[in-house]
Image (tube, rainbow, N blue to C red; front, side, top):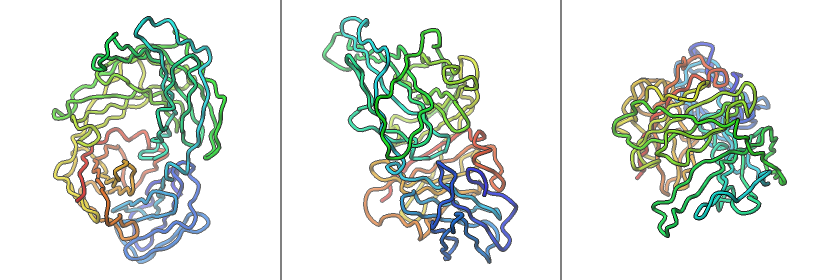
Length: 402
């Protein structure tokens, strides 16, 4: 088994050994169905299955109840470990509490103090556990107590609250309203079990001396992507990052907690996004810069989104993204839930087919999001756990499926 998932041990020359693991826990997934060509086999008690009479790059499909179907296309290694992600609902719990020392006063007429509570992410690309939503904005609080509720992933999480000044400008129209971050509150080291809710949690306000202004340098994103936004991340550990929300997308500076608030080894990360006016419905380019220091974070070089993208319920095609080591296709429904993820491990491939094992619904609105992924890895010899820091960019183009 390759830690976190990966490919290794040279070209496929007769046999391929496939392990299937849980993305969040690295534990083996038992009785998952794995398909290569027209052959389907279940994984054993160790999440393992062996295929014979195979040579060269293979397309490997994995399906398991309660998990998102996953395909690794043109994978070429004798040993392949494929991580699969549980659906968000199966790895969620609800946390609730308040902010110690909360004072709603002191901002003046026309101003409201509020807070938005968020949870830390793991470092696994595409994991649905990082995108769990809280209904009815229950994670946003105002008033005398600022009681909050937030849905989070399982595992060890950190909660952060962006404390904000909402200024109505004394007018009825919302067009001139502004929101400014004026502080933060945190609680680290919360151990969460799926389905086990916790209440009475108290976030502590970060002292003013432990706050600093962080500036974003976007550099030169693709010219057609004129809308920019960013997330400043605090890297707490090997598999935990707190993504601080930038509430004003036009701003290039954010008041943020110093990394030391989260621990002596915490560092900074920049996730910068350039997109068209269509937002998630249009082309995007994302850069990820890790292990940063200082108070100015630079985006550096960007990838250009793929062009010539077409997709049906059975296949997708695209033109190559310059600088991308991998390409990926995510099929999504109208709720933006990823139904199927296909990763292509050949930087010269421009088409992929959906294997029968993971066939998409014959009806209903779908979209396909085709991405080029920049990563300094050898696609025949890598570990997602050991090499995760080598991912540096994603450029995507979504299309509607007829």
